[in-house]
Image (cartoon, rainbow, N blue to C red; front, side, top):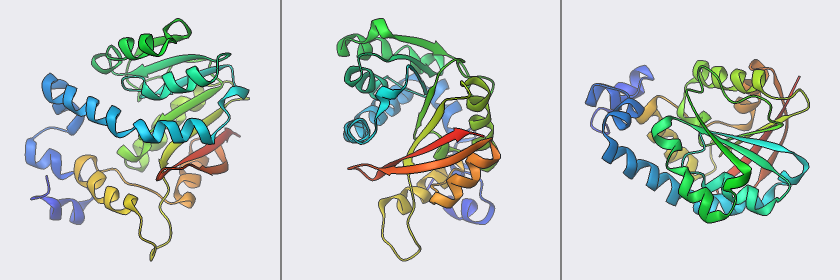
Length: 228
């Protein structure tokens, strides 16, 4: 992937697909062992972020939370554990979502969390008032990012909210780990990290208004949008 980096710089296309022959997620689906390693890594990598997010944001004002691309359930388990009145839905690809059952049971929240599987480019579970997407939008280019957000917009209650848990890139001369990740996302998926203004623009195109950005005690922020 890195050996073919100049292809991505010139075209904006992921060098992973050029190097391997298929996209990253298609490769992981076709190679279960590598897929398991990837998902376990994402779970471990997100442990500190999850604690920071739960501490920084008041999830208790909602009733039904949908974790879109929720992986093995680390985030939704922590949110439900801290907010006993909430119910939840974990949504991801079938081979990923099944791995969440043990995590939810261990956290003692399995009775309050449904597991749904599918493709978020086609649909997401309906009826939630809070839709959370952690490290999802940065995987994709503008068109596909907007497509995911529009699916969430169509599925949620009109009094709901969408929360994007992402790195928010600061100004050009400020160092930030997200600027390194931006390069990695380009090579792996053709995705990108974004500034606050770029997230506001994506949300607006998908039918949301950016209401606020909540910093956390991690490099990640919570970008809150509401339907317009």
